[in-house]
Length: 260
Image 1 (cartoon, one colour):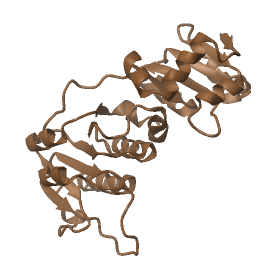
Image 2 (tube, rainbow, N blue to C red):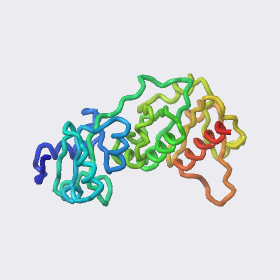
Image 3 (cartoon, rainbow, N blue to C red):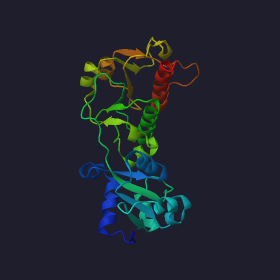
Image 4 (cartoon, helix red, strand yellow):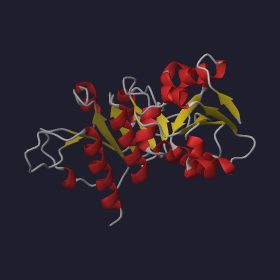
């Protein structure tokens, strides 16, 4: 185990770039996993990450100490002074442990006949992570994101998805119009003014659920490309639903119908 106490240390500066910059993560092909749950999810799916980074106080926590005791010798461990670890942390209360791992691969191209989650401009990392978590739980594997979505593999999105990423084929920077025009199934978008109600749909075949940005919703051209508009009935006083809540409702209605 190597210890770092100075922010001028070259390796610490590399770690800080990875945690704070999407460009650096894309260049290196690495992701940052913050917290014990995410690291354990990665270990279960892909094995040990290439590097474990732990704070000095984190070394004293039983859960982290037990994990480190079982880490194979081919996964390097770096201990940071608490102040330095705090500079890397993505939340106000640092977890005490994070890891650097290789970005998981996905299928080379989007499949036109597979259940798909289509996201148009979802920019809040918490919302995006929550939606990806719901998609993984609902058994939707393929995800298509427009170029203006939040970075799917950023530390904040990863943390919000709680390991859901590792069960998904995530395609970023997609041409959503081209995908929807060639989709061999039913593409569906939610809209407050839609006539059809969610619970009247037949979701037995391949479906592409389309959801839009928090402020503007789905762009008009993407709305037009989707084959069908539906609404989620809201008998209460709320004007609209958070995009992550709307996605979860629609995804699990698909699950409900197919489990009958």
